[in-house]
Length: 246
Image (cartoon, rainbow, N blue to C red; front, side, top):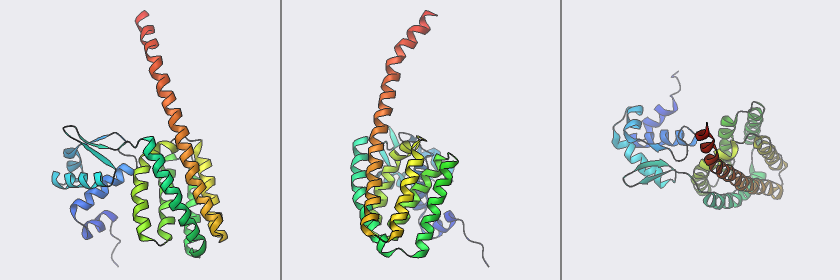
């Protein structure tokens, strides 16, 4: 029996080199290896992945279309830093889509699918106990992606994934505040319970409310970060004067 192929090798056998490069850069961005605002160096990435600069350049173009990077003339390519107003707009769209997903799953989810979702929620709760925000973020993305996929609407899945990839650039900062993890995990457990109940109204509401609560937390966190940043800027002159007087 042949050993299972590594995912990257399997992708390379069925896709173009540019697609493989795009997937690898996208993975690194979504997993936080390149933070929002980071500059992506074409030559460095080409050397790292053992390819010429052409596929990297083409991958940058596709990632820009996907909303994950921005290309600034004479400056280079940067990981997008999603502004708060755009994040709020995406949350509003996501809430409506999530409500539809919840309703469909309450009516059509299979026992095997329900078992898979429960396992993801269990893993998320373990990540909370371990204070592992990094893996919690990845599990969170997988949880919602699988729910949308299970709903069985390919058009909705495609649109949803594009929005979530953009939003993940902002939400990683949101979940970086450790105190939010237990709250988020509790909401995912409530979503699981509502879907398992078979009540479309309850499941739709649980998913809609989760998205809207996430939006409100995002707004509050952004205000706190801005406040801390402003406080830090106002304190700098004082520190400078103190240093000069020593």
